[in-house]
Image 1 (cartoon, rainbow, N blue to C red):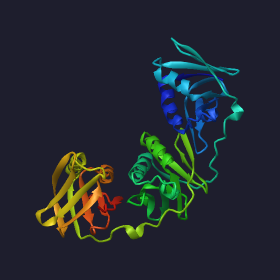
Image 2 (cartoon, rainbow, N blue to C red):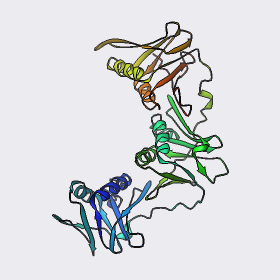
Image 3 (cartoon, rainbow, N blue to C red):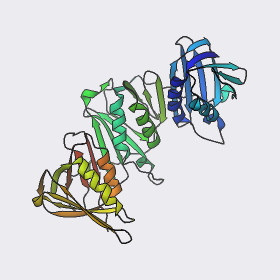
Image 4 (cartoon, one colour):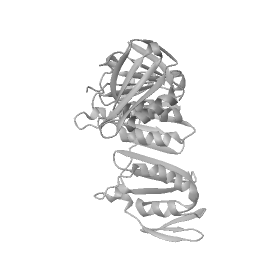
Length: 373
């Protein structure tokens, strides 16, 4: 293998591929990159896998000789991330991978290429195609509610479902629930039937990070045990979680005893300040006073002090009511709302979840159960 490549371009794809590294001391091959020079496409293809997820990404290169090599990632990444030279020549000779730039020469030992695990291929021809930034937003807004539980692993991920209503992202840890819907008009597909799957939280987090930086369409392929995401120069394969995601429609409030509209910035600021005075339970009391168009936030800790914040409702109706919530979870729900303008906030009862959504976006909502203190 022999090729010349732009260093900055290589850094970008290494940042993507390293998301699939295992960091495993027991299986060093899972902490390595497979480099493949493809002269037919003038591409350097970089692959990595930890057996749960696999990433294959590529960039343009001047290929003089085709070939493949498996190189340990740690020092390879450190070398290129520190490098400021514009171009690098990469060449393999036996078990040695040689790197040459204007000012540096480095040799890396390589692994036996036959030990590198095969990254599964997606076999299905059925796909969903959407804008990459919409995929990123869907995962970002759902991820905040995902659980971490050994007893209920089905809560440790994102429930993805497609139907005539659109593509839904949902997550819950029992205490809170997020749901995002991408409408059918934003989706191209050859699916004729409904389909759903459970995506591991780690996969959702990494896909969100990759998708956010892609200004293009992404194809999503769903099979029985795995899911694939495909961009022009990157493929991402992941195993799916087993189990049944809970039926959650019955816990979504349909009517409210009190509700109103507030400024996003003011609500966010008040929650952050209230958190300073919150106790070890992270509790904050919310008192709805619709007649006075006020939302009062109270927090107190005997070792710190106490705080009261007032957020004015732009519009409000219903009864005066008070309930206590985990301020960190409440802050999570407010932070991901888009657009960051006006927030609809409502409460069905003191023992029912609070309901949050952006006033001008019907595609996402967040609900959170109150604390029982």
